[in-house]
Image 1: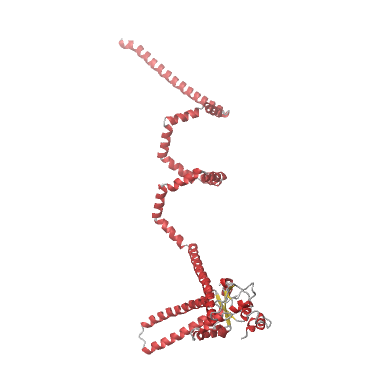
Image 2 (image 1 turned 135 degrees about the horizontal axis):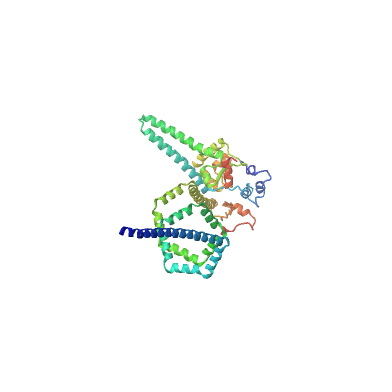
Length: 246
Length: 189
């Protein structure tokens, strides 16, 4: 009897379980359908927004409202920006980014274009002409970093190899030879001038001896040439040199 | 050699000067009638040039003599061979010395010493270059000029064109050579 009495109860429980499972499946399907419908609706909405330049409108409103400034302010105040910078600097990504940028032909072209632009020249001119430029140059020259760099440079072997190569170059050798020859030319020119003066002096002395103590009127004519006493006597008076010229 | 023949025609200033002794002396006329740019170096300039040449000649001879002497020192030559070698070397030295001066005087008119002092030996009449025989004669006259206590050189102090004995015998004069003229001389004019 008990068994007979339990059968309906068991049956009802099983029916309840079946109904529960069916309900749960229905709930799942409904949720999935709703989710898909909601996702599709969201995508459609997004497409519609993009099609209508709604993003620009949204960004303009955000910008007008100062949201970006507020976010940046918060990032800076909370130290998030600093953390981001620290993370970027310490991470391997920075090196990869820099290497990629340096290897890029576009980057080189852009840098070359910027350096060749007149704006850079104007900027450099203004910088160099300004008192700040003078101060900066003074600070650089007076900085211990520069002295240290120069000291290291002078200690480096490569520098002296370069210096040796330059010293042995034909251009430098030729310049030194030219300088030496010009020095020899200067010396010989000086000797020549002195010898001409000595010529005139010896000639005057010889004529003084030859003519006794007679008044000696030899004089220079045209670059070391000496007139004889008879010559001077014969010259017209305006041309005749005075005794002081000796 | 007459002065008039050296400087030009019979109507030259020299002849006129001789005729008019009371107005212009012969020496002045010779000097003023000299070709343009011809100026004559004096005793000191020429002595320096000659000293430089002597240094070159004797320096080369000394080097060669030392080399030959060292070379022969390792050979056991008889005593008479040394005398012969010395005589041969002496002869070579004379040839070298004469050849040195004759070569330069007859080619560029300038020995290296003359070139340093920028002077040049030219024929007394006109320009051009000395012939080799004339250059050798001039060198012989240099020796003659040195014999009487250098009087052959000192006579230039009283000469209008500063000529020494060798210049008078070889009929040459020594003039200053401008730089451009030196270059033309090197290039063979």
